[in-house]
Amino acid sequence: MRGKRLVVTLCSFIAVALWSTAGWSGPESDPLKPRVPDAERGENFTNCKFHKKRNDGELLWVVKNGSPGTGMPALVKGGILTEEEAWTIIAYERSFCKDTE
Image 1 (cartoon, one colour):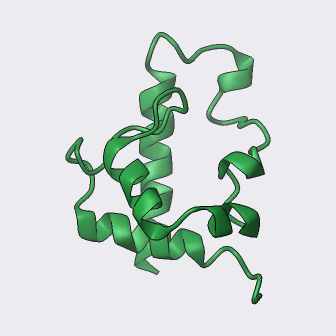
Image 2 (image 1 turned 90 degrees about the vertical axis):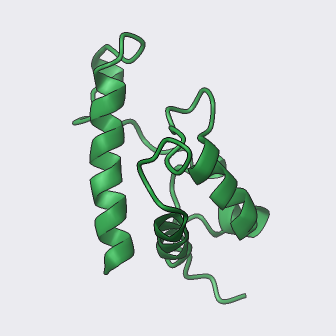
């Protein structure tokens, strides 16, 4: 699945980028020992509440522009992804919610 490959590659890239910055240090920020995701903030894409709160355009905006204070860089504007790849990732993340309501 192309979306999964993109997500796995990007997560590794982002973790290394954050780990190498001066602001991301200490045992609680070790990319090999991640903290428990905050589902309400969208850090766990299996949380259907997150998906119901946000439309695809909002998710694309975050992938394009990043999210200050979260460690999420601007992936499209930063030249890391194309917009087509961003949409592929959004579709993949949406597939994690299994709520059929």
